Length: 220
Ligand SMILES: NC(=O)c1ccc[n+]([C@@H]2O[C@H](COP(=O)([O-])OP(=O)(O)OC[C@H]3O[C@@H](n4cnc5c(N)ncnc54)[C@H](OP(=O)(O)O)[C@@H]3O)[C@@H](O)[C@H]2O)c1
Image 1: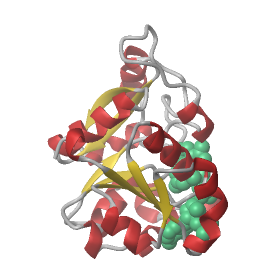
Image 2: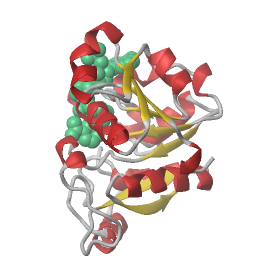
Image 3: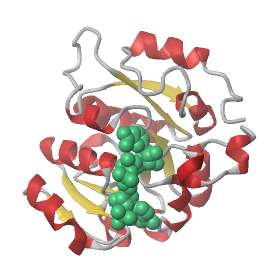
Image 4: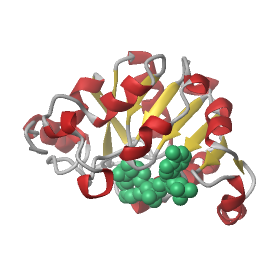
């Protein structure tokens, strides 16, 4: 699947990041189906604000509706993400590990797993792509710029499926950010919380340098 095949973005999580990606999606001509944990009736204000192009649904229905589906929820809740409707799909993972919110997660503390790896393990038949986790939510709609802009803000993209990575990268480019291919899910720790590139406004060269400077024992 290429970005041209995408008409609908499903979003699981309607908080800071989910609502911002919904705004970007609608602004770039996609249909967006967005969900939270409490039900679509709690999203009427957001839907009214964003306007045509977005609808609210349950997480199951957002997962089923999306050609691509974003999971953007507290990491502690990823085991509740519906599995069946996401089979075979590209799933964008924005999630970060905050122990004070998520509790201690041993394989992350041990640096034997990544946050994206946890979602990939929960969704073994989906193509998980890590993206948008190292940018502050507000910056998503204010710091983008067209391709070719000098110093354009860059964001990393990781995933085990190269085509899925390329699809997410192409959409990211449309959304105003320079994608940097970070390789497999197992490499995505390089963009996790407190690493050198985390929420820094770097262009592609600066981001690549920061990813190279990342060290693995950060959650220890
Ligand atoms: N905030 C940032 O700037 C930022 C930047 C990069 C990455 N991140 C990461 O991205 C993720 C989302 O962050 P956020 O700031 O957008 O979070 P948030 O504002 O706290 O919003 C979380 C959303 O997830 C929903 N949710 C929780 N459990 C769910 C479930 N089981 N099924 C469906 N929806 C569920 C919540 O719905 P209810 O309200 O109905 O419970 C809420 O809409 C987090 O992992 C965060 O660490 C955040």
